[in-house]
Image (cartoon, rainbow, N blue to C red):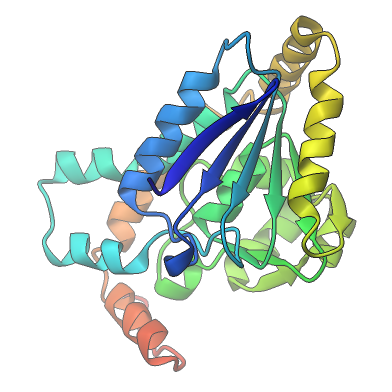
Length: 261
């Protein structure tokens, strides 16, 4: 499986396990991640959850090749719209895990992978790791209802900088901005994430989970009202000529020539 779940004592570990593709997120992986996250809700046997990636990178984000395949053979609009909303469902599933969640970041995390990281409660990053949102570079908007959690963490100006430039930012910078909670030596991020998970697992679970739910409810109170249309914006962006040019420039490693259409 490309996404796996293991439980040791009271700590669950979800692993993105597609290292040969740098853990690029296929639709099947996202559906499995949603299912696993939902399965942990209310589990009395699990008191904390760690999310990690196998291999050198946490994840390079959505599988671009798979996306190009879907765009080349478009489904009926209603079906395409449901598929475009999968990422937001994954975000809600991860945010909805009752137990504290800690993500262990390493190498590169971009696009959807960074979205998932912001859906977790805490972020531990290996020194030298880099995170960002590359969607703008292939001519699409950031979706998955991910703007809300990002703005909460870094503020509106830095969120604009990250999403509008599509650049990768080092963990040290992002720690100063509030996106990363802790930087550790490379190779120790998994162990540190599990240490933190054990600390939360040792606390009274009912109180911890109620506190988490209340804080999430307050901080994300307007997200559904404001961000509900980002998948529809993506569908609009995929109709323009700039998308094809952006994908060609991405593949050919050259600057794009954009018309605004």
